[in-house]
Image 1: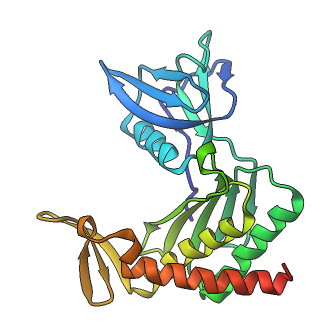
Image 2: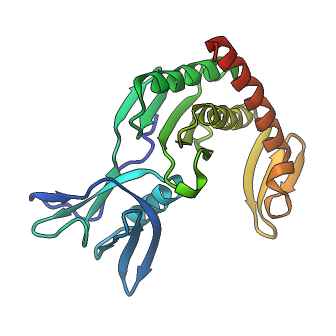
Length: 248
């Protein structure tokens, strides 16, 4: 079972380090051989000696809105020139031997317990309890203009090993976060059952095979894509049932 986001070091130096306050990555670029990282706190941090793995890690952090901290060594400040970046994980919880939750939130105890209960419910409902490995990232949603909204995605880590990654953001609406969780867990169930597969075709780009039909993603609206219709329907039924059982 792989971790959600490993820490990639640009350099390894055994000296004291400076650590930034938690922030999020907005964008990543390379200009004149310098890695530039625009962050949610308004700062642009730089790295001179970096690897492809570090760039890929930062791009993943930006896509997921993961909360991170930057590190610098020697006399450098992590708010200017950095050497490492890693998730600012608040809590790591092993739901089972194959399911790990990386919690970046600081939710009240009740809301946190509801989300964990929803994970356990979803695993059973979607029959993901036998041989499926899941890393689930639960984090705050930082877009203020999207107040009350959530976002999420799922992707295979290793489909042969049946390992998957799910990201769910939370912005003061627990029911929507749970619905998003069930939506993404349904996608994992689709992959695991072999009814959905995504791949690249040289002439058309990204293609999703749903059951026996292939769909070119660029020509398939999100709202009508059959795998999304299926996930929305399954998530709504599961969300209603889950909260009814809670008496909420």
